[in-house]
Image (cartoon, rainbow, N blue to C red; front, side, top):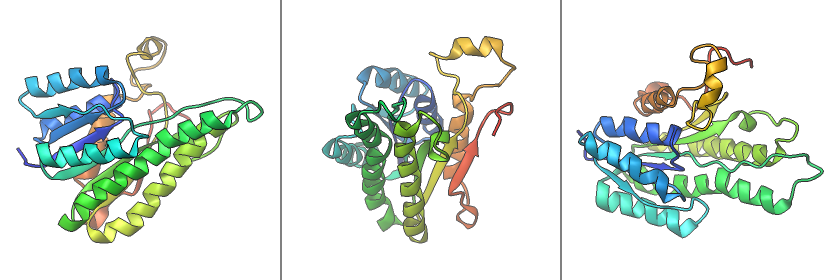
Length: 237
C-alpha cells in the first residue's frame, strides 16, 4: 500500500477504467474524472470492492477551474499526487472543405488544452517533492496528419508538443512526462463485435495499455521514456 494518489482524467469504460484499476491494485488512491458521471461510479465500485480507495469527481476537462479543483480535492482527500493521466480526447473528422472552426476549437480544447491545465496543476504538486509522473494519451493523429483527420490531428499534435516541452522542463526537476501514441483500435465495449473477424489480440487490450502506463511510472529515472508507441502485432505502420 501507499499513501500516494493518482488522477485519471478522461475516464471511459476501457482505457481510463483499466488504468485506474491498475494503479489501485498497487495501493494508489485513485481520483477518476470525466464529464459523464455514469462512467465513474462502476470503476469506483470495482476498486472499493477489491479493497482500494477511489473517488469519483465529475470534471469537464475543458473547464480550467474544474480541473484545478480536481487536483486540489485529490491532494486533500486522497494523498500526495504521484501520477496524473490525461486520457481525454476530442475527435472531429471530415474534409477540410467542411470543417467548422467551432468544432475544431472544441476538439482542441478537449485533446490539448485540458492536458495543459492538468499537467500544469499536477506539476505544481510534484515539483516541490521532486517526483511524480504525468502521462498523456496520444494517437496516431498526433504523429502524422491524414486526409480528413485535420480536426483531430491539431489537438493531438498539440498534446504531443506539450508533452515534449514539459518533459524537457520538468525532467530535471524529478517529474517524468510521457506521451503514449496509441496506434490502433482499442478493444472497447462498443467495438468488441469487430474482434470476431480478426486474429487473436488484433485490437489493443485496455488492460495491456494500463500495464504499459504503470510500467512507465515505475521506470528508473536513469532510463525514462518520453515517447512510446504501442500497437497490436498485426498493425501496419
